[in-house]
Length: 301
Image (tube, helix red, strand yellow):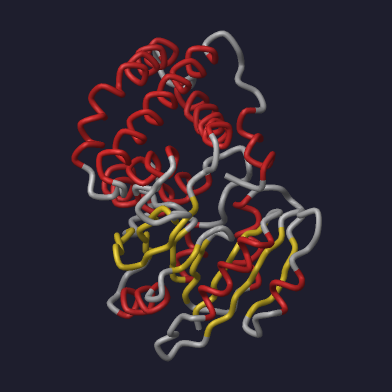
């Protein structure tokens, strides 16, 4: 059996779209259950879940996507656990890809996450930017030892050995993935295991995401020798990085819309990198408290 676990927080329409994409999947001989774990929404998505016979609605009061996923894991019956976010759309071959890779012996799968465009071929500024710079799971797996939990699958036995996802104060996907690799488990890159994620609609949404990541990273740097100096140097490098990264945008095959799409991506890149550098420098003069909690202000990160 494959258990699909979906954390949910105040995104009923997106959840309905996600569940519809899962209903169209081929199970490849596996039984499938879908566990939607609500994490404190203003209203439970009862109607959305009830529309799908394979789906069950659970509740997890502890805030954070990690605790929500842990609740799903605790209730799951499958030998394979598949994770997808409520605002994602699964590619038609998503479940088939998971089954095929697991049958070939994979322990943990990290799938490709692409941008779900409102108007194909005509990306907005943040759609263009995130098409190249967001959700680069192949890079995370190869160089950083983790994959995103918004499109991941793992054997239940491996999940039990590695342990639960961390709470809201930690980047739970990075933390879990690095614990798994430290134990000797292998994360397999599965480019045909595709989920589509909407781009963030505004600069404010991206800023909230980076506030959280910056706070997590700064906490790690402060524990290192010369951590504050190294953090300063990193902030200055981020501020200067749009020049070098613009060449990556021009060569990208992931950005739609021709040269207009690439120009939008460069504009978004420059604005966001300068914001990140300013926030990083600001943390040198403050404790950074509370930045990691801002993800819940608008339905998740």
